[in-house]
Length: 173
Image 1 (cartoon, rainbow, N blue to C red):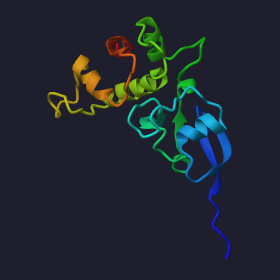
Image 2: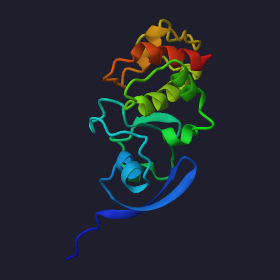
Image 3: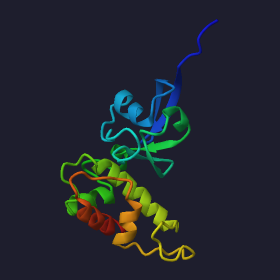
C-alpha cells in the first residue's frame, strides 16, 4: 500500500503574477509568500492569528496569512504589501503612513497597511462594526473609535496607534 502524497502543485496568483509551486498541504499563505516566493514584507509575528503582522488581502478581504492554507487560496487573488505600491509609486495608505509617521520599528506596518486598505473598503461597502452607532445606516461615520475597533486585530508593540489612526483618517479622505 502506498502512502498518500503530502504535497501538491498549486498555482497562486500573488500581486497579479501567477506562481506555480510544489507545496506541502500544510503550507500557509504566509509561509508560501516568505519561503517560496521571497516576499518578506508580510511578517511572521505570533503565527497564531493574534497579532495581524501577516495580514494580506485575499480577493480584497483581509486575512491572517498564518491561518490560511495556501492550497485554499488557489484561484484567488493575493495582494501583499509589495503589491500595493512601489517605492517610487506608493499606495495612498502607504503615503499616509509615511506622512503621519505611523510606524516606529515598522514590523507590524505591512499588516497594518493591508488591513487598513481592506478596512476602508469595508466602510465604503457599509459593513458595520461592533461600535457602529446605527447598523441600519449604510453611511458609516469613520471616527477614531470606529477605526480603532476595525483595526483591533493588528497589534503594534511600539504603541504607534495614535499616528496609525491619523494616517488611516488621512487616507480615507
